[in-house]
Length: 247
Length: 328
Image (cartoon, rainbow over all chains, first blue to last red):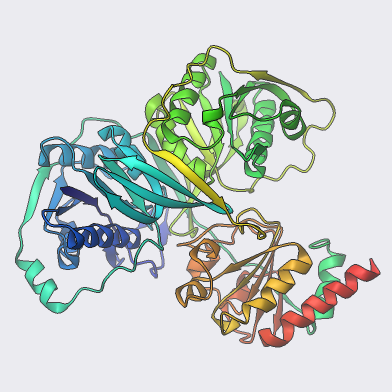
């Protein structure tokens, strides 16, 4: 059984994002593995630990700077890692197309499962997993918080407003992983050292397609509000009511 | 050129978020020169109920198939795409809910449309639509320019509140969709079951949200917040640390790795206000913060504040509200 995991490299979520002249300045940011992708890798590795003959391969679309996140995937337990080179990361559509090409060329046919993080913590689009599923012609469920596997299929759960949905689906399938699915393991120094020696496969991720959207005119968002302090709860309630904030 | 709205229903009721999208689109259609508006409802929903919820001008088509009463990703996408093709609509709108996030990319891909996710849309001069979204956990805004003939917009929750936009005459026609090829098979995946949480409101849909963070101190202390929320008719949310400590379920988490909420009133109790948390509350109309640390960043993002211990202030607040409600 084959499991592919698609991973991305994003600024550390604690980073301050600088915007200059409508463009995000990413040059000084500390880049890490996308947090949602950690759930994806963890789930794939857990399934591998439960079953014999299961191979986990991580894919990332972009340049050699992504060696660091691919090596992290190896240290977490992926068997092999592939870099889909030559594509563009302009929008989700092109990223999905690049990953699709690399996945198709790596496997004969499709892998049984493709795990992706729910979204990337930088662009917050949540588009790549479902776009990739459409391109691969695979079934998909997004934002999965619980998963069990049986022969030929899966049972998965996803949270909706005010409840939980349970789905059955057959493989090949794309699953996007949400917080709550598992607790990603910490990597140990031995695994990190071993990962450093493993080779990164290079695959052709070039696509002759145009992006679906263009993002422009970036600008910082201020969240500052003018806080008025009340001394007592009674004062606060009076003010809230008077200013029609409540009631 | 026309506008197409995918109206989400759950349990036979059009979602509040979908009604907000409908109102936004009515507004956009009006300011861009009276464009046609089409709506689609999947599943058996009462015609009068739709008329009561969706005012303005346009035609709403109901696909009355039992199989569509609950979300069926493949069949929904296939049928909706067919309806959009037959109306020729170039701008497609839906709410950025759990269903919308799942459905929008499927529909966009099948239509070869651009996808503008989690955005707000305004009409500029000459009816050109402008979509703006946020990235980097809500700290940066960006304009989305669609590069295809069609664009699918998933609208951020509740940012556009028209109280009574088109009250005069409801000219909406509600029709049963005819000639739509309802696919025989639901496809893959199949929704087996939905379990709705009983007795509590979802934070993403509540008008008032009371949330607690590390400062609440324990799982048990959340009872104070529950009690306050009950008095206000609101829902209880939590910060990441309260969820990571196991005090509350992930479904209640507000912020970057949780939900973005847009209530009328948000009361943050013992939440320090990390940027990742603030990302989830930018849509809140009014923010009240209660924290024992006057320098906590949450106060910079709040409209009203009380410096004090949660264990004292929250029950006082509840009593004050009860007292006020009695007087009223």
